[in-house]
Image: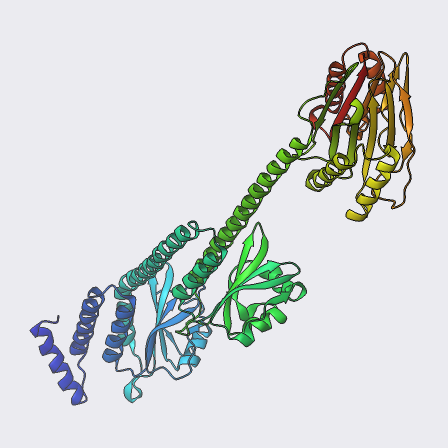
Length: 588
């Protein structure tokens, strides 16, 4: 605050000026008063805007100038108008200036480096303000009142002013920068709180529609927009998964993949819709008044996009806004992917339960124990390659003490094969003993032909054993011919006909075998003959025949156990590639 003595000098100076006189001493005192006022102004505020505006007013008042401005240097080396009075309308907001020598005041026409500022703003004088070796600002002044020139005293005053203002101006700029940083940090903290809240809500649900609603509500509330749309990738198209604020005429369900690809290929970060590549998707977003497009991306692959409408305030989306929208989109995609994985897991658990039930049902179809037959030993077992299989074996008691034996292999694996196997089991249980084996096979073939798909079929070996006569009659319906080990030779039981279920009117022949004491009949599925080693070599008929000859002197159970163990050792760690079933009949 100026002292009373200062006011006395100022009043005396004003009186001399009214009389047309300006004594040098009083003029110098006026400049000192102005510098004192300037110093007081500079020290009264930390705001660069207030410092610059106050400094400009004091200088213009002291030098009686009606036009002036202070230009502050930016990071791009352009000088921007930060304080101004009386500049012509339409003047640019920034100007490039050449190097101005330290403690040099440029006049119009004296230096081409200041030419753009003189011309654009109608200035007469440029005074640089240095901090260290760097120009941080430039004070520009227009013509003085009544056409008076800028003399040495005025230039000296400006140099003194530049020296006084350098440090406060820089401090003010630093203060403003800190304030902007603090504002950004406050915005970031607010956004982080929002993201934390939405993350907690997203992880608390596995409902897809709830997640979509949360994303839309958060985006619209945070950015103050009245419309948004969520597009997710689907089969050959980009589907509108959720929307807010769109009219029915705007709610097109899908965007074809070809139409969406140009946008998705370049959309790697949030960007204005107007900057997207031209095409149907961009046209649609513009037509629905969308302003910002945010990719839903994972691993560099764009799975969809979140489109936001124009803000209610009309303000553009800032860099912080785009960062927040991008983070929100990542959370949305992660939550939706979690829901998808959860649904897959639930579906898998359901399928596992169904498969377990199917396995239990299938196991219940196999005989609970091996039957006891006078003069014979029987042994059988089946191993499904998956949870359920398509192999089948059975023992069925017939009249007169006879016993029916069956082994079958249904085309395919898994649940479909097990269902067809159950059908074969039920049919055999109903038909066994009601007709001759050849007629029985023809009936079963016709039933399967009419009740199954064209590519479904069954290989079946069916035999009836009379223990009293040791007579075995059989029909082979396209099955692996069983091995009949008698003495030192091995014969194959291949009489019969084609597989069941492919030819409607197929006919079958009956084979006859009389078993001598010590004879062994081994029935297997192709899971044994075609079992592959790690080198992809089949186990083959010869190995099975050789093993059966070695096991013939032992029991039926031992022969079965040795055969299954040999096949499993053959396949090694890779395990099976097909169901394995074997049935062994030994004559005592």
